[in-house]
Image (cartoon, rainbow, N blue to C red; front, side):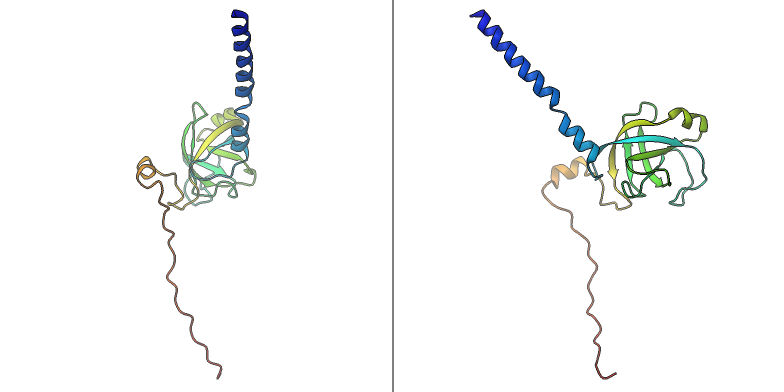
Length: 169
């Protein structure tokens, strides 16, 4: 009886171990290929830069500014890095660059020595806002609780009738 119980336990244990070993693969695959959207947690690579006076958005370079590929993270996007111990925090994408392509985010640092020491790192970031549109933000806790089933209204421009053209010209 004891041998049967031990055999059943080991069989169930092995099945659980194999299942949990592969359970995270779909999430990692989705994180690596998902399109950025507000609230999405994505895998990127990060580098650092230290030169420049103004960003492509026209603002002065300063701490908290990041550069990204505008096709992936448009200018005005707000991101939060949480997997980089010393440099975690909220950054605003205000810059672009010819060498910033694909899933790469370039963080501005005042010290060039510090930027060189940063190197290239794998990071996980959360998209808080995508571009300049304030409606493209992650919903707050209150919004999710009280307006979870409602969809935000789309603003449309008022339509005007087309001018009448006479054929007597």
